[in-house]
Length: 154
Image (cartoon, rainbow, N blue to C red; front, side, top):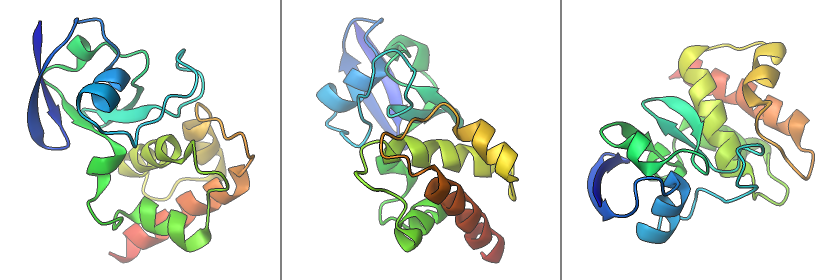
């Protein structure tokens, strides 16, 4: 079955089974490998993308459920790492191994779209679905605060 998807502002038509997880369409069909496979059960957040501005776990989102919606992956956040969250992550040196960071960044970006100056509690709540095996949670929180400062100055 052919499914039409709007990914990072570009139209794509993919011939897949409707229940195919969006993650595998992104990675295997379209070569957008920035979105990571972590657990496959929507528990770790490594596969987080935005669907109509909301963070979703692409490993458990059927591609057909995303048809007709605006999908943004880490590759679509910015072409040159100029998004405030990406800039803050680089400036602070948030990642350790980096595997979970595309999901962390996508969740942080969604939070900052809703809350321009989130509290620690709001950051912790918004990021609670993203696991970091390296335990960089303090740097992640600092990165969100720094991104909020960057946004406020722009």
